[in-house]
Length: 348
Ligand code: ADP
Image (cartoon, rainbow, N blue to C red; front, side, top):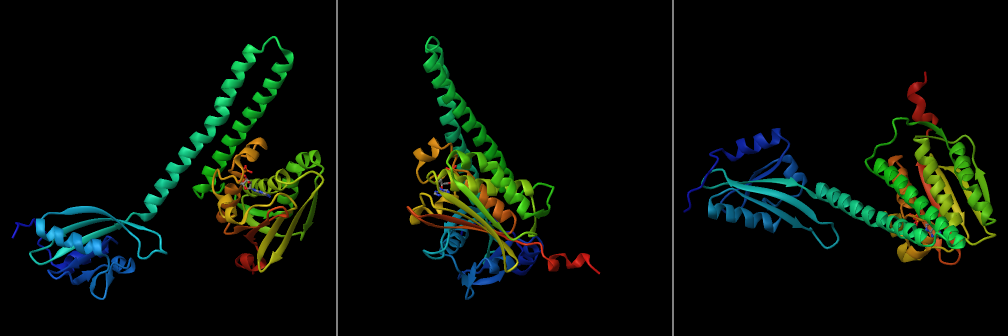
């Protein structure tokens, strides 16, 4: 028998102590039967029919007993093929000669956040590199072409386009990181949706006119939601801008706003290119573009729809797309309305 560095605490005392700390813990005996467990451990599904429900936890308990030392391990498993992986950090140590205590920390969310952050930074660096290297190349070309006014004009125009692209990329990155942190502006207030929509249409009018696209608006007036009007305007601007950018000249874009079961249902419909079915979920991801070359040519950053998605989520709503290639797309943004009943606490 190895000499164990046992804690010399009874299973009940150890579990009571972990319970106070709101920590997930399970104590097993020599046969790996669970003799005590905290509430959180049970909620996490670590115990099943009086046994440890996860093979890796059982094996760790056996090893900790064999070596007589505290073992720490990261365990990653999926309950079945359909569920997402769970990431656990587990410490196993002897309480006495008979009992091993496993202290389990769920790291799934922290790891997911870490990965999202890492991906985001990698994507940003990659996306920023393109306009920056274009600007560098174009400025070199400009120096060489200094005596050729035609070329100077062309390179200067391209320089302007790339720096504009860089500017909007940086602006959208800042906006996205702000709303991703769930950080709605402190100025959350009742917002009249019709003002948001008209402002967003206004911001796109120039682009619409340039392609002779008629933008029609059908609004149920007086709909109010509690939110951040700047963010909502940006989300609507992005949806309308996409409808225009991904449509041919001389077409129409329709915007509708109505009250459906205490939700404002805002639709933006175009008769444009449409989006292939298998890509419709992915377009809401950051930097995702159906056709990167076309999107780049139109100055797209691939961030527009992820801003829309996060703006919707931050307001307790959602966004969906219905689209057919060659026929067009309808984006539907649903936001909870500020109704009389929401407001009734303020009334007599
Ligand atoms: P981008 O800046 O590239 O437009 P978005 O996040 O706004 O980025 O959109 C992601 C992708 O979804 C676009 O690159 C485009 O391929 C597709 N998309 C978005 N809106 C529409 C639309 N109304 N019609 C067709 N395709 C669209």
